[in-house]
Amino acid sequence: MNALTYTVVLLCSMGVAWGSFEGGHGGGHELSHTVEVTKHVPVPVYKHETVPVPHAVPVPVPKPVAVPVPQPYPIHINVPQPVAVPVIKTITIPVEKPVPYKVEKEVPYHVEKPVPVPVEKHVPVKITKPVPVKVPVYKVVYHHSKH
Image 1: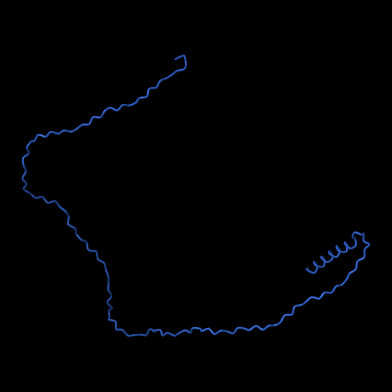
Image 2: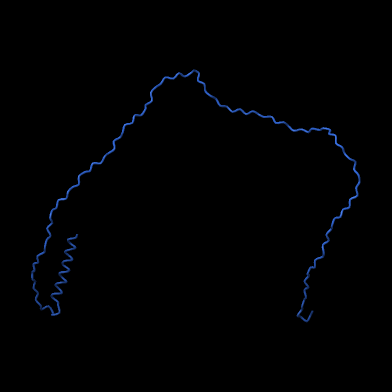
């Protein structure tokens, strides 16, 4: 597909160039010629340099340390039969409260006989003064002659 595209573009550009050479300002009577020019282009030459490869650096790797773990082993234990098992049981004990009751006793108490004593009591009675109340007076003004 690319080759086809390049070919079409090349043909179009050649047609435009050919039309411009043939139909110039002079009416197409000019002659054209082609001159080949060679030019020297310097090509860089790359020199091969050796690059030293870095060597591996030894890194200390920690090794696992074996720690002895105690393993369970069977031990003979004498267990008394039957086995005593502690039992925890909560027992509610009702507490009887004493019921209150009335106690009537005769207590000797000396009581004096009442004696009439004249007492003068002065109770101030506050009399409120009348407060003047403003009563609005409405005047009716009639503008008609009938009234």
